[in-house]
Structure formats: C-alpha cells, structure tokens
Length: 302
Ligand SMILES: Cc1ncc(COP(=O)(O)O)c(C=O)c1O
Image (tube, rainbow, N blue to C red; front, side):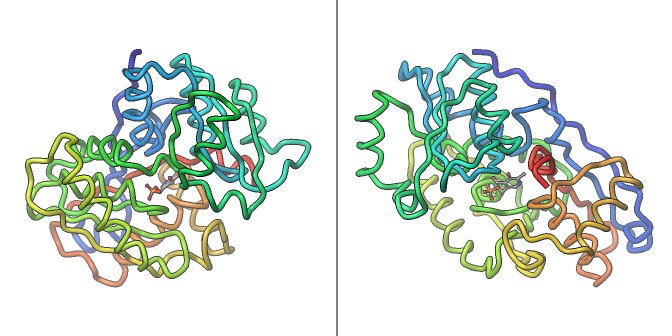
C-alpha cells in the first residue's frame, strides 16, 4: 500500500493587517495533498488504514452524517487502497443522494442508514457487534476518524510547523488539534477554533485524547507537554451554520489569495485568526501557520 501523497505546500498570505501588526501568515495547504483524500482526513485515516491492512481486514466500516467529509474521504481511500467500505449514515435515506453520498457510492461504498436514536449508539460495543453480525469481520473506524490512530496521524502535521509560533486549526472533535499539540516544540502554541457552539467542552475531550495517547504504547512524542488554547467565539451560530458575514469573508479571501475555504470548518478558523489580528492578540514578529484542513467537498452541498 503506497502512502505517498503530494507534500503539503505552505502559502504566504500578504494581508494588510498582518503587515501592519508585523506578523507573518502562512497557510498549510493540506487541501492540496490529494483531490479526494486530503486535509486532516488523510492524517486521521492513515494509521487506521495501515492497522486494517496489517490485521488483514478487507472491509472498513465507519460512521458519519450525510455531508460528512470523513465519509467522502473514507470511501475514496478505501477504493484507492483496495478495501471494501461501508458507511453508516445518520438519519434516513434521502433521494436523490446529495453530492457527498453520491460520490461515496461511486467509490464503491455501501451505505446503511441508522435513525438518530440508533446512531447515538455508534461508539458502543453492542452496536459494533450487531454490525459485525450483519457485515462480517469489519475494521471499524469511529466517526470523523477520531481515535488514537487519528491522533497519531495528525502528529505528522506538526512536522510542517517548524519555525512557527502559532499553529491555528479548526476543531470538531479536537483530534487534529490533539495530534498537532502532542508533537510541537517548546514555545510553540496551537490555537483551536471550535466550529460548534459552546466549544469549551472540547477542552476535556482534547485532554483525554492527549492523556490516552501518551499511555497507549503508540510512538511517543519527544517534546514537553503540549500548549494549546481554544478560541470559542467563532462558531457563527453553531455547527454548519453560515451567516452573510462568513460567506462574504470566504468570497473575499478566495479573490484576494486564491484559497478556497469550506464554510463548516476552515472559513470560521480563518475568520477568527483575522479577527484576533485586528484585536491585537498577536505580537510583532509572530509567525502563524493556519492549517487548511480541506473539507471543500462540503461546499458542493450548499
Ligand atoms: C475540513 C475539516 N476541518 C477540521 C475538522 C476538525 O477536525 P477534528 O474533528 O479532528 O477536530 C474536520 C473534521 O474532521 C474537517 O472535516
């Protein structure tokens, strides 16, 4: 199984506000590493795919909503690396399929629907056993690729962050942030931008991901305890909520810097960073790396 994807590019943003504050802004274009399996999705999937291969599984089963970037990427990665894939989708089937699910079945993914109550059981052994009875031996990847293999993969994102003072990333489950934070150097900080309302609850989740990783027996980082902080005021009303300000910001950002942003994750983080710049959060001389975590397929559904 070849895991060679294009190396991510770093693109400098020459914004007026960054120049006036004396801050350097770069974007880590993880959205460009592959047309379909890109962004943080690739990093979260990588070690799950490797473990599945090593254990001789031929089928991957995972969970997601109808617009899920993770479902999209798992379907494509499964197809690329020779796995059968099953996507367990939250809610009822709606026809015609939206572009995300249409793509998933084109990649060979079998879709199964669970009503919202059943779907809440997605992390339980009972449901996993039921799914194994139904589909045979399947390698189960949790929703969003949010497990310790996911954290391990995201630690590799930090190798692109040498020389930066701040690494900024959008947060859903916080898995990506946990991985980045675990392998940063001393004095570097990660700023996480939760895209859900009341995102402060992620603090506990991230702490336990970090703690569980460190006792897991997976390769340890050589660095000191991670330093990270959540910026909880940029959710724009909650998960997948978009307002006119965010839409306008994304359009202008694309025009000025030729970088497309997705509305669910990256647009909110980029908006937040620009706002923090205006508010004087950063110091002269700071170097910022904004992680473009992909997710652009989601824009095709809007
Ligand atoms: C495009 C994009 N960016 C950021 C995130 C947030 O990642 P995490 O759930 O690891 O915090 C996700 C969700 O996985 C995503 O799809």
